[in-house]
Image (cartoon, rainbow, N blue to C red; front, side, top):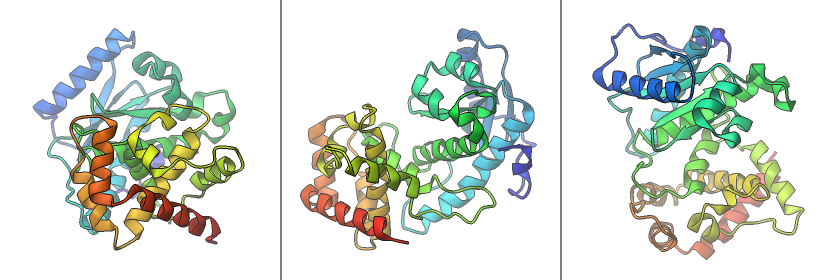
Length: 304
């Protein structure tokens, strides 16, 4: 994700506009958090729909903004064309872009996020990434790929919760939010990858899980609880099935209206009972959903 990624990504990767009051408030809040974490002053810059704040070099921050703008230009029309009520928010969305894992660890204190390059903060409503090129572990050799993958995946969360797909105040199951992110995470600037392609890296996790004693998480359990995403032994399978779920619901024309209604109806009050009631009301029998999900998995595993 070098500075060259900006080329051809559309107008105003760097915006000439002055920051709005809302932009300044978000920048000030992130600056305050950085000072508290012991980081020096962060630099900031704007694009049409995003603002970047961080200690990463200017070209890397600019590149991140360019990727976010290009991704949003594909993301919004894709879901709008499928009947979802989506639009970019009036205020710019915040992207924290840090120079290395040390800065990220200081600001976020997120060891899990550090392993994959970043995270989306639902409470403070920003995504945070860092440049993986300075790492000295197994992922360092693929740093460019990790940088791009993380930014696209976390941008999907940022857009999902701000463009109208999901409400930040609702109790959205992790399988839904991660399913939406994994559905689009293969996209890259200036690449042929489109939304909705078979996500073979996620299917690999499904294959590996199938070789063990616990090779499947029921749709009911996946929706009712996020525990599978917190267990290292099941997290890969949970992500794989989340992708399968959203892929099936979007790609099956008869199910797409149900998905639209389901996303709008997410309950504000957290709890297993509310989650299950909402899912059953809009997606139908969860036993039938589980059966169809397994069939969809077999179909995708057999696809060329």
